[in-house]
Image 1 (tube, rainbow, N blue to C red):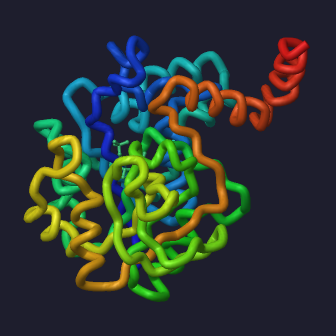
Image 2 (spheres, rainbow, N blue to C red):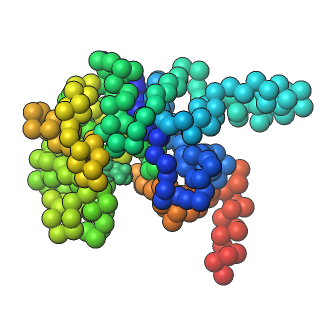
Image 3 (cartoon, rainbow, N blue to C red):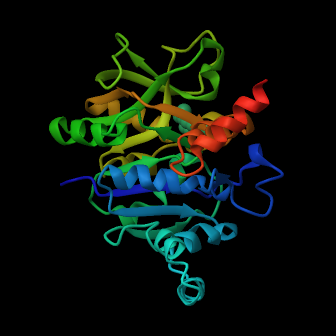
Length: 292
Ligand code: G1P
């Protein structure tokens, strides 16, 4: 069965992004001219995803509102003949894509967040995209599409990874592989560990936050005890899966921006800003002026 569903865990309170995230969800913070979450949803849709499952929190209704129609706004834009804007706001989500939300009632970790979507996922294999990280394509075919292709061919779960400096390994899931794959390639994983202490990591290949997983991982998540940070970790369930069957690390080709951190966010604004079809050239000039 093709991978058509994607879980986006958005229940986190975004403490790394305070004060901006005090009264709006961190996922709604604007990167150039649209909220960060839109880039992640577009990435999933470009890879063929047709149902976005938000695992969310009571304070985050603006995310659902953003992807919903807004009749009052649409009518106003229409009566003012602002058709370009009308087109833009009605085309945020293609008609064949639906958004479903479930709540994560308690902050028990990423593994728990994914498990909250169990009933919506049912018996289908699925993608997970962590919305703090924006993945910018280096190619027409995005990395997530390549992971789904590989999953369809091999039935091996795919975990997107990128190399990080050795002193940062304790901030990420880290995979154990016999050799480092080339960009765009998958390699069988020997293990995976969540936030290893510096000096103990099996490699410097970090889990980016894009996964293609089989429906059965939900059963493993149900049995996963609390791990690193006293939270139920998705990484620990993947480690259990990898003891039973082949799981592969996919080394990405694109570039990541960690919008959960302030400096990562600023970097994203610069990179997406200079490539913006309407604002890009003026924005580039502005950066050049400031750099003098
Ligand atoms: C989560 C995952 C971790 C991954 C990271 C990527 O950690 O548990 O394996 O490397 O996202 O951003 P978190 O950043 O939520 O602590």
